[in-house]
Length: 554
Image (cartoon, rainbow, N blue to C red):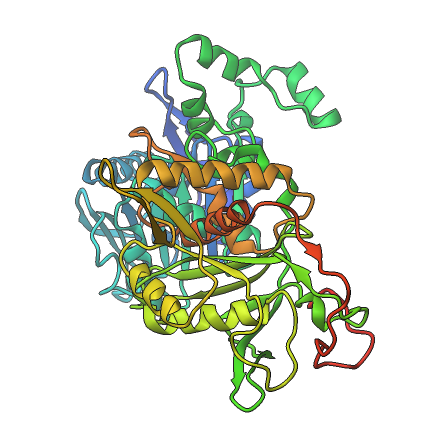
């Protein structure tokens, strides 16, 4: 090999410092998988496609199929960063200790084959740390560490790489603990993961990725399907995909013939974003969600009660816990003063109100077969929740009373409350308020009479039946689901291996699903379609007389 002149060495070092791509193409050798021999790192088209975001994004989440060369790319990037930039810290957190060591092995493999003139002075080289020193005593450090709950809390890295986040049981805690220091250092975070739904960190990974897709967080995002590895798709398949978007199939069909379960194939080798972020074995509600993929925000506010008029009303409020998509029919400009019978019903899950799980209630307009309002909070105790449900059932009553009319002279919306735990307190208070409550008939001991049980009593079978009824409603309703939280929770509601239904993991809420399911139970309990009561009842006039009010709250 021809020896370089000092000027050529200076030029090469300058080009390497200026361009990571130049470093890769000229000096970066990786280990060939089959031969175990060094080979120049020639970027695949998919790697070239994502490289700008790897280099420039302040926050980046990458969801990918297996074996797409991202670990080697990140190892090369980390080494380039630490040998070209003084006074920098780059931290890589792997889900397991041996993965952290393997990452550094790849870094050192690349480093051993670099020309000596590209390397600063090596101060420390271990299975976890690489420390280099530049002229003037300035140092930079690369750390590859296994997962701990503290993460990079005590450090201020310039770059934090979270590798295989779906396998990291503490990824949520690590991210929350690490981000303040990284933000303080104006650093960057790169999260990389497969889509293994049974892995302990999948919930966080999916939330970050879907949030990035919806612009609900500041992350940029990248999805890499299984054919991003050259050789997995035939030339004909690639041409067909470029022509009409038909996904390649040969590789996956080969994996299935080899005995891989279809669900595992979708998890390890997703072809689409939908396959990558779908719940284990798909959502329990499956294709029934297809029509409800465009939720819209309602008007947020709170309910108020006027003691003099004895009327409940809705007051818009930015951070209110009530979200309304449709007003009660009697507030509309075209209200004909003819009340409806059995028009509204409410279902409610109840929590302790301690800031963890949520109390959630939905209002259904049985005429349009839509959920038209949602009450949701994790800071309201069960006793107060009963009062809010009572007011909600009054606001969505079957007709509008005149000011001063007796509190008990009208039919309010039926309320179906889940009575496990805190729900018992809510039902007890609603009975005291003489609310219109859902009732189950329960047989007692042999020879005893049938007894009434107020509210919905949870059991594994009852929860399964409720989920099935909700699924049927999603399919059969002519209306649409407007609540984005409900759609999201439904997408991760699954049938577990033990036969129980619920959220796919402990990081997810299912309170909206239960609230919606109980609303469907109330609808079934009421039987028959809502109908107007003829002739018109006098004195039942809407308090709002102005014209032009739309059915839509929006």
